[in-house]
Image (cartoon, rainbow, N blue to C red; front, side, top):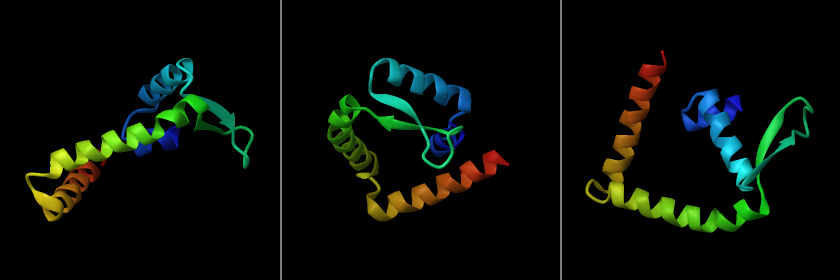
Length: 91
C-alpha cells in the first residue's frame, strides 16, 4: 500500500480507505505478490477492468480541458513546476 500511496501522493491511511471502498464495490481485489507472499498487490477485478476504457477516456478529456488554455508546452512547464513544488513540500 505504501508504493500506491506514494504514487497517488496520498497517505497510506487514505489509500487504504480508498482501496477498502473499491474492494467492497468489487472494482479491485488484494492479492499476494508473486515475489513476496507478505506483500499484497491491488489488481482490478473483472468489473474494474470493464471501466478501464471509460476511466482513461474521461481522464484524457479532463487533462485536455485543463491544458487547453496553456497548450502542450505550457502544460509540460506547469507539470515541471508543480513537481518542483511537490518535492519541496515533501522535504
